[in-house]
Image (tube, rainbow, N blue to C red; front, side, top):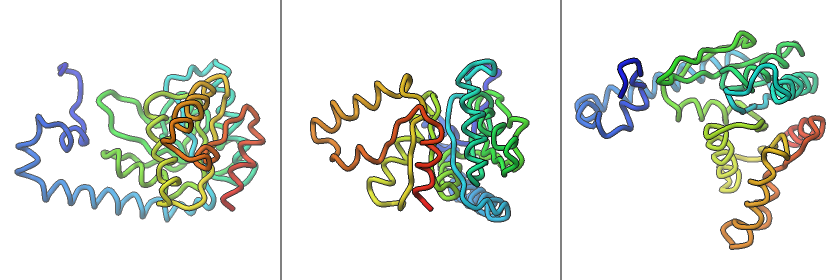
Length: 228
């Protein structure tokens, strides 16, 4: 571990190098989980977001790129359709969606996370929450969103995408529209789901329909209305 790398709260819980510390302070850690849940629920309830869509995407998306512009347009169109917009609060695609929501005059939410490297909340967030634990943050995303849009992203976006898909597939959450934005980026994954997962019987035909892919932002926004 490098000297300038911070040890995160998640690492202290999950990494086996901190097992002895966990054993000694297990009850206290559980209380910290509880406190973060309570603070998150209270803040999100107080925000009165109404229908909200969670937008994920890469923190590495350059501000001067077409993908960033796509994110701004998506956030704006969601806002114009009456949705609040929730992101991870970071730079790149998240900032773009928050920016579009702010331009549309709707509530723009950023749910930040403690990371080993500094990231910070972008300037277009109106309602900011910072979390130490990924699993607490994930609950907030899902509980307060009525739909999910995925812009091109990396492992974090994939993690949230497949968690949402699994919860819908298993009936843990109700109607929850999910849209992949950008066939040039998501097309290979979408094809693989059909050609491998479906073909080999790892998922059923109805499961494929849980995931919509589009290049048309109006179509994506209309898909988000299916929850209403």
